[in-house]
Amino acid sequence: MMKKVSVVFVCMGNICRSPTAEAVFRQYVERAGLAEQIEIDSAGTHDYHIGAPTDSRTQHAAQQRGFDISELRGRQVEAADFSRFDYVLAMDSANLAILNRLMPKDSTTQARLFLDYAHHHTEREVPDPYYGGEDGFERVLDMVEDAAAGLLQHISERHFKA
Image (cartoon, rainbow, N blue to C red; front, side, top):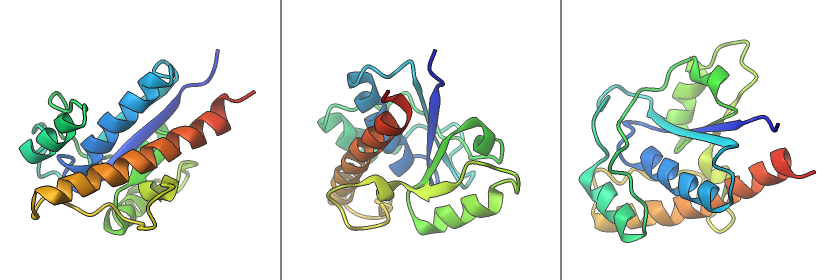
C-alpha cells in the first residue's frame, strides 16, 4: 500500500485562487487515476470567508473550463495543516510569509509557492483577481492549470514511480 500524499492550496480568503487550484488539481489527479493516493484541500490565511462558497466569478470562469467548484467552502488554514499535509502551497509571497509564521517550529513540511511547479509561467505569484475584471479569473486559471500539471508530474515522479 502506497503512502497517501496530501496537498493544501492557500490564498488569502479561500474563495478565488486556492479553491480554483484545489478543483483543477483534483480533476488532474482523478484523470491520472491517483484520487485514492492524493488528498487535496484548500484554505485561506484570513478568516473573512469561513464557510462561504467560492466567489461567483471564480465559479463561472472555472465552469467555463469544466471545473466545478460550487461545493467548496472557505476555511482558514491552521498550524495543524503542517502535520496533515505534505505540500502546503501558497498563491503569493504575502500568504507564504503568513504560513511561515504559522508553521510549527518542529514541522517537517515547508510552505512553498504554488507557481514553483509551473512550466510555462515565469511569474512566482498567482495574482488575486478579486478586485479586478473577468480577465483576471482567466489569467488565474491559466497559471493554475500550468502549475497543477507540474505539481502532478512532480508528485508522480517523487512518490509513485518505482
